[in-house]
Length: 418
Image 1 (cartoon, rainbow, N blue to C red):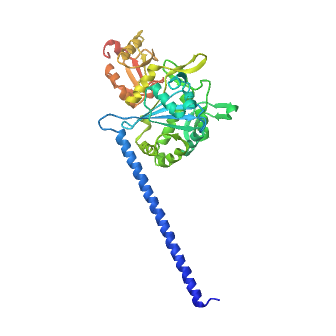
Image 2: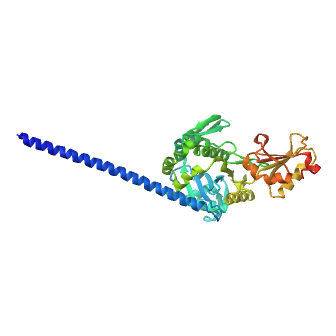
Image 3: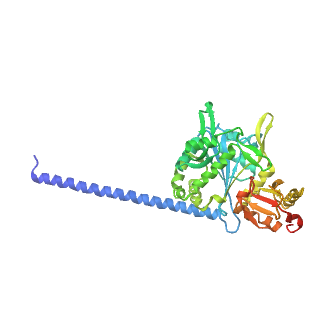
């Protein structure tokens, strides 16, 4: 049996060991905190340096704007390279002007694949060479250098939407479709609603009788089908991402998105461009679709490209200028052939007039120029000088899918507007 002195000694030793363990635990906690702080500082420094250097590279002071082109690919499975791309969008960013253009490429677009020495649908390229060959083919097709690709599958897309808290969008008609082979059922009701990831996926996958894309109005170059719904959804997605409530969550969102996408963009670049999102506004974002029409070659259906209009859009993307104005000219006088005469005069000055028709009546004493928004007003200023008229921003007076409506009044042929 231990003596009282031995018991006291053991108790003292136990207490010393407890004190030592507490000191070691506090030291480990302090060390972990220090490592975390240093790690955060290093990460912050890396992000800041990458952001600043990317800004310097993308915002040159003398050599003009530089452009970042990223190809977004949506596939119907996560890993299998035998799959086709369901969605192809070229995202072109100019940080010097804070403008973004999103060019949708219909999946049935007929392109020449140099590596295979044959023509095929653009969505089939992925099955032969994955994202790398798809990037090369799109680059050859458009004549544009593409820096990176970003690929996700349907499951990843759905999760991204859930991370953002859903997307609010107006559904114009009931959407119902069942495909038992794909275990796919789509049922969305009309109205303004916030779509979660699953419902958003249904919205962008839905195909009606117009198919993937269709030229529904050749005069006004208006398209319908799934590609147009995807463009509408992307606009709503951008609105959501650029909200102040979302901007501060971008680092967290990037971390989550990084897990569910495949990309060749370096992590530091992803962070820096993500941080730069706060500089952008929805007003500086334009969307377009590769112009063309549906057609059949050797029994196969394709989207046949309008090469002239496509190159016009591509030139606008590369130069950072606005997309060409869509103009209609209306005869507000009743004088036969006047609107056509004005349209030809405008075309001779390099403008693209989509349509020529009569106005709602023939009693317009003065020529009027209406534009859809402030950006179109700025771009249309040379037209104002041609006619000697003021431009009015009046989207409610534009009844067709155009940027500018010119109503020719009686003052034009009387000489005061010519």
